[in-house]
Image 1 (cartoon, rainbow, N blue to C red):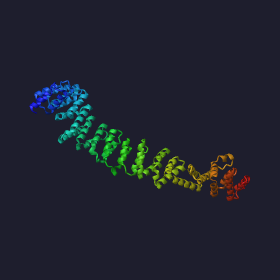
Image 2: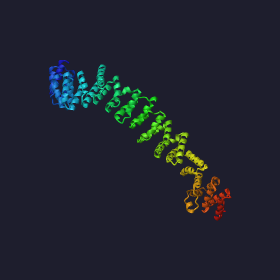
Image 3: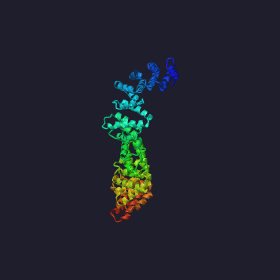
Image 4: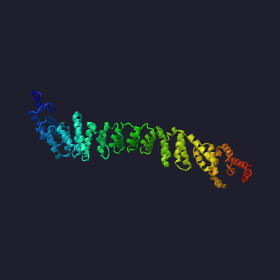
Length: 541
């Protein structure tokens, strides 16, 4: 810089110049000035100026020009704290070994906040001595000092050349390797891991994998997971297990980076069992990530893991798992299997309702499997039959009706009237139940009736009430049924005819039909004789 230009800039520092001009001049002189007596004197004088911004600019110029004479005042400013402490510490750190040493000596005497500012300034100074001091600060007992030094060092890394980066990585790797016994503080290890991650040195990968695993503290493990980045694209089996275990942690600081890493990892068939562990993670986000990775894997193991999700308290997640199960052939089988294996009626209802919308697409063989189990429950009086029947009704109501009716008739033909009645009662719940089925119900009820001829007993007999209703609404069908029902015995016909012969109109005629059928089918029996007597008494002979 020509002397004339330098003098012009010096004049711009004088008090008679506007504040903005003086600040700009101090800034420019810090970049292009030379360390001569006149400039030194001017800059030192500015340290006592009342304008705080001007003092800060002067400190920046003093540090860049390495004006050692300013060190006492700079240390004084650091000790006072406030807005100018950072600028004063940075300027002192740039003065060289003397300034660095002075700052290091001052640190133990200062408050924690000021010590952190000094550590940050040493790391940002950009000199070899200051950097060494900043690395030493990583071993400080105060986590705040360690963090401040690490942050400033990390900010300087983009400006370093390859050899400088390697030297810094060497130092950090040696630091971690020499202290494996655990003498390093958590803050120091975490800071070293973050710095190594910023340096991007491939040699740090084993350090990151080691620190990501238990029993290291959560903060260190989280930092190591964040550092793994490019090293986790193709993990080994053990490394994948570690990432999956971290993703399934309750602590979000561990789960989040692990899940981010796993997004880029392909799912291999041989490692499918390891991936399934995500579906048991405590956090729904991890379970969703697992479901995304397993999309399209139609296996029994995946289906079984998804079935467990249907018991999760999060309704939205249950619906997601159910929707995925519905897409899988093995998923539909697993849903039915879980329903058939339900231990309580409540559990069975939950599973039945969960798949009600899917049941229409179930193949006939699967529906038959459900019906067989429902039949077993129904005949054993087990309330788990109801949810299974509900599911079948949602799938194919007509098919269920036909199967129930077929089973009822088969049992009736075998004279297993108790079990037949169970099916017929179930069919009769439907308001659209056919008259033929209702007649079967009434007739089977008749077979099980005590057939007590007393008026009170007959009035309370449900089978007679059912016949009365059917005679009123389906007289012709009731009469035709009676004539075709060869399995009704004389005792049944006599009881039926005896009751209705005493009634009026349609019922009276129906009673007469029953008694006449008895006489026709068993003419020489004592009951036939009694039937003739009843017919004469009621005027139906």
